[in-house]
Length: 106
Image (cartoon, rainbow, N blue to C red):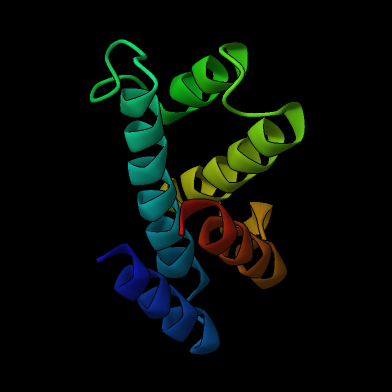
């Protein structure tokens, strides 16, 4: 399912639809973060904010600092998109986020 969502994000981005592409990337990333948190016994993995889970995964040593930063950057792009702040990210930002999510989540 997540792979097909990322394909949709690719197609949307190719069509110039940055906002929905960024939101989809965030959805896939957030699902993955929740799964990682649950696998690693982090409390409230199903209800905590994704950024809080990202911090927790760094704190317990699952995410290195560089990986934690990359995750947060991708979350920030998706959050900006979801809140109508499309001036805060570019198509290249979304491409890099897509590459990171593909590499990290699959």
